[in-house]
Structure formats: structure tokens, C-alpha cells
Image (cartoon, rainbow, N blue to C red; front, side, top):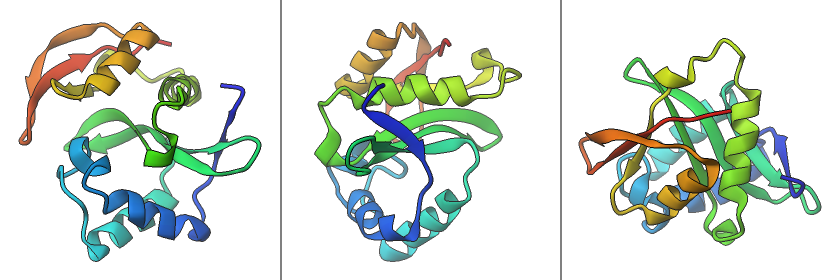
Length: 154
């Protein structure tokens, strides 16, 4: 956690965000499970500019954009997720981002009601959940794949 800071999204990040949202490898487990169009990516970026419960993470030393983590309400359910730009995969940032984002949640947040879905073939995110000590609580699926729900902890 010493290498990351919570930051704000800024207009200068738009190009990096578009590359991220339009990369099929990155989008494999995110959103519609496909690269976003320019219009969809622009809409996503505009929404994230003002997101209060999802945080932007940057490297402390270089201020490079690493990714996002936090809660977003989807179909009336609080959903916790994280995503990293591909250049930062495999550096241990995901677990640190999750820890920092959970610390930023209001004390009134009922973690038992926050959904954390991880697809069965998303082994990297399963490893992050294990590292965080988040237990798998039940099988689940969405319109794209089967997986499990996990329980967050502080």
C-alpha cells in the first residue's frame, strides 16, 4: 500500500482509459465482457469523473494511473469491483487497492450486502480474494458467466 495513492480522475487520463476500455484482454471480465465503443468509453469516462464511491489509484512515485476500485450501484445492488490497466498487472496492486478502497467506505456500509462477484475462470481475482481473506460464500452467475460471490472484510 506504500506504493499507491488515492487520486482523482482527470481529463489527461482519457486516452489511457480509452485504451483500457477498448482492450479485449482487459475487458474479458469487465462490463459487457467486450471492448467498449468510443461512445460507450466516453460515457463511462464522464460517469467516473464524478464517481464518489469508486476511487482512482496512482503510483506514489510517478503518479501513473494504475486503476479503479470501489463500489458502484448496479441494478439497485452495491457492487464492489476493481480493475487495473494492463501495464500494472502482476505487481500486487489489486489487493492493496481493495484494502484502501474498503478503508474509505463509510462505517455505515453493510459489507454483507455489498456484492463481490468473481467469474469461475478469473483466477487472478480469485487469488486476490484469497490474499484478502475474503471467503467464497455461494455460487452465482450473471448474464455473461458463472462464478461465485465473495464476502468482503475490513
